[in-house]
Length: 456
Ligand code: AMP
Ligand code: MG
Image 1 (tube, rainbow, N blue to C red):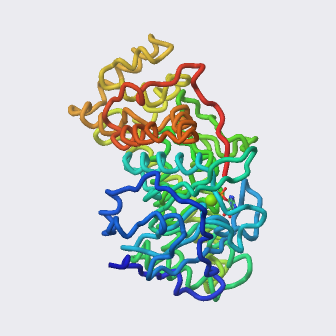
Image 2: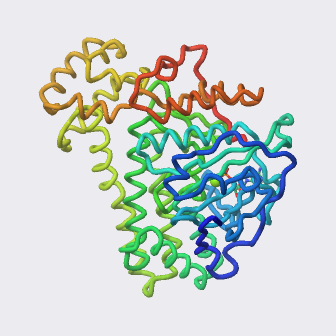
Image 3: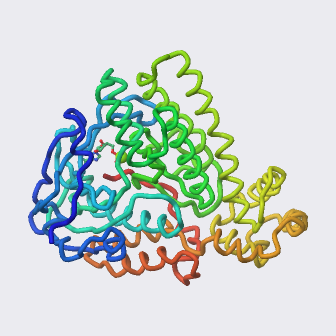
């Protein structure tokens, strides 16, 4: 049976993508395939041969293409980015099936269109962990090695990730047509996005408000897990509200609101505590891009500005929900925000995940430096928490997150052809509420990783 592709993006007007097949590779080998996700998508696993997953064979019904987009990278406008190392094969059950690391495209600029093994393993593990942690995200359907090397600082084995997303439409996808004055493309993109993601939205204003809500909810979830995206450029901001692009991302070990991992984020633009502000910045770019579709520019600027400013209120509500659950509060109110913030202030320097995971037993006291201050805080908390607080908390405070030093260990083993650690870690992080001897533990000082690299 052929894969049941529907390729709605490929039916959009010319100028929004280039038809492009993946570039074949020398000797593809399967690392892993996500059987559960295959089932969810109604895919027959036998159709996803290593030839298909490596781009050596284009399956019947696919309409391979590279999408155009632009974006602000670290605040600087880049008028043309696009899929420089990814090919959208088509859509199945409403989801994009994309090969990432599949060779050069017209959007590759200086790049080789490939990915080395490290980022592929990292994205596989972290995106599947995010899904297991109930955070909207792109998914990983498969990973293969290519039998070829790519040149980074040294020669490294290359690999291809099959990424699944409810779409790959980004803020930068809107920006490119707005910047070029191509309302003739901006309009169908907007209609397509509404039909696909927000079918109840009535026009650009509703679309904007829907994306604002989705992003506010997403960022609140990131914050609740100590997740730092690391490269929140507008081209890495999906309008679906899914987490996309796992380049230099990291879950922090020790809590520090100013934490930055990415080696290229010199000014801390994408620091943990800055993420909500950056989301607003990105949404302002989306708002700006949608204005050409509005009949009255001045009126649109006013309503769109108001909508973007509304992010803070939506975010605050979402943040209260997320963090309220972490403290076992049944109906967190604005008063509880202070209780929550007081605890966060106390836990600076303590392991974010472990401290929360211990909180329902009061063992969190051992994680907090100022025990007396903890006791004062705890008496206020005990007066506030719900009767079934332990229940609420165990769901909201995972035992396992994909820690950086362990992801690195997986990558190092993978480079030696040993994927046992990859499978081991994947099993642990996709079962995040179960305590795990190895994967729950915080790194010792000498194990901890303080910097991540974009390393495409
Ligand atoms: P990213 O850092 O993954 O968000 O990518 C930013 C832009 O750089 C996108 O347009 C990518 O397609 C492009 N890019 C990243 N790595 C490569 C590569 N190895 N070859 C070609 N283009 C790339
Ligand atoms: Mg990207």
